Length: 401
Image (tube, rainbow, N blue to C red; front, side):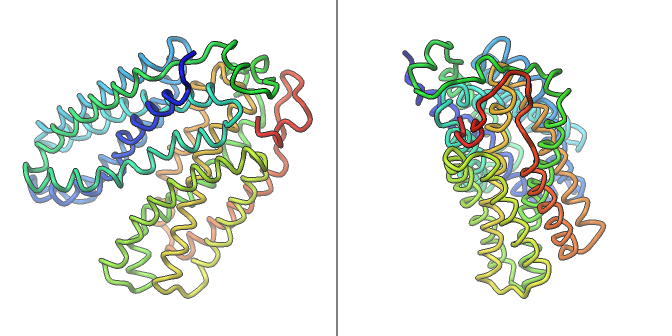
């Protein structure tokens, strides 16, 4: 039997490289200086990448359910690497948008869902924890690659940096992909003593989209990640504009958010295996609502600012760890890749909704509305029930199967 922890190793290696996309802000100034582009136009590259990445997860998830995660993740790694290598030759914004944003974004989306789906299938007994570990790498990617990107930009320039990163991502992602495979059903009975009702309770994507629970979960996912991304995207601005900190102090928020984001994915994923997914979600929504209300109405200093954004990052990590597990809990693991691809669109949209809201109304008002949305999601988490395609045990969610 293949040691299932090798699958986790491959997953983490892949996700660290994919997560480097969150260090995009390091490229803004160098690209502006080299080509004379406007900041707003350069930043669009990141938005295109995230949108393409989210959309690609639907197709990639369906494909990997059919041919397995290794091939799909390998193709994604090649596309991500190729996108960045081509971006090193870009001399216009449209070329950058297409090479980095579209080709690179498809590469990330093709790859992202594969390690997550494989890990969830191998660990039915630790589904929350292992989802957290699998996505923690993505949360840490930007942090780990930050000094590498800064060193490359200062030594070889921004365009050549894309070239070097392209080769690094291609080699490491394809290497990690070789460790991914789906477990045979008979192997699952060897790794857990718990009953596995989901093996006979697999929904196709069409069947999943026919359940009202999917739409409740989708909206809950949107509300939770919208709050997190709002704070993550504007962390420095919050420190400077609201707390009146200097830029250097405010920038420390980026580091602590990344660390707490990764920690939240692992810790809250593990907690959900014990407390149950919905109980854990209700705690996360409640905590997020309280902190957002405080950030909206309270007076923050440096310590309470760092504490608040750290906790938001921690809760945000929890959302990204729990929703893959919930998708598997509710709809089975056979079509996990495609099904989570549809669920993940809530995250893709939240990446645009949060920043848009902040453009329309002041930050403090945006925090207030975000807190209200989290309270609505808390109530929804209390009401949502497992869809009845096949009969599941009454205490299934509490088992955190």
